[in-house]
Length: 391
Ligand SMILES: [Zn+2]
Image (tube, rainbow, N blue to C red; front, side, top):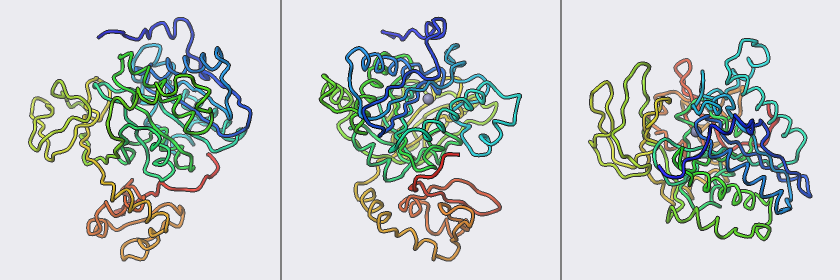
């Protein structure tokens, strides 16, 4: 592949620091916090952040609010591996975080997590909102850039500024991503997948995304960035639409399973029913539905083999927006088999039989995502929420 990124140089030169950059603007708000390298084999985000901070300095670009760049899994970055012991983007749960200050024998990742956690907490305490969290990633397969968000209306509004596909509700299929945790406190948080890990275009896409995000969040005026239109166009080039997609299926790789994706799947490629997608321990894995392939796994580490996604209709998007604004979700609580969780106002406890009858789509419509099955009950967690103290 041409134009490979030189990643080894990052750590040797000791370039990767936890805080890649911080620029204070004329006002206290908004505050933008961007992460790069949460996965150690994805250096594009860090590279892009370094370049953007350098340009702000070199060209004396004035900011209105605050802009922070934070690096993720520094240890893994130095070895160009996704993670050493645990995936740093799968451990952001309350249980894990509560354990952090108490546990002295932590995995490398948990130590890094604790540092990042303290920084986030500190920023949220001393700076002024609105806060926008951006997480820069790349994928093992070839892909056009896309966005992933939890399905809250504020996330949707923000992602509408970018003319690239947006995938809703991936957190329903993943445990403990950083952004889902941040989202629980009501802050806008958007994941950006820039392209393939080693492709130099991924760095350019991250740079374009960062400038567009700084403008969309009103942290920088468009006029301050000479080639703003170039950035805008460079992301638009990849895709003619900015459609929203939902996840219909995830293939989970089991421990000790030998999983091999059929070669050559580009992200978002259309697939038909019964199409041969991968092999598991030598046996064929065929698609049981039609749709588009999403995040096919072409690297050794990772438990998600592939996803199948489909486009969400404009009608559904509009209906769900209206329903949530009118707070129709309160009607759900009146249904038999559905009750509010007394400990958490954003959670509905649902009898699995009721859930089957109502179909998960209804809960999605009102902004609830199925999260856990506990004591024979399903817990649906609402994504739209008020700002609360980060803990
Ligand atoms: Zn990643």
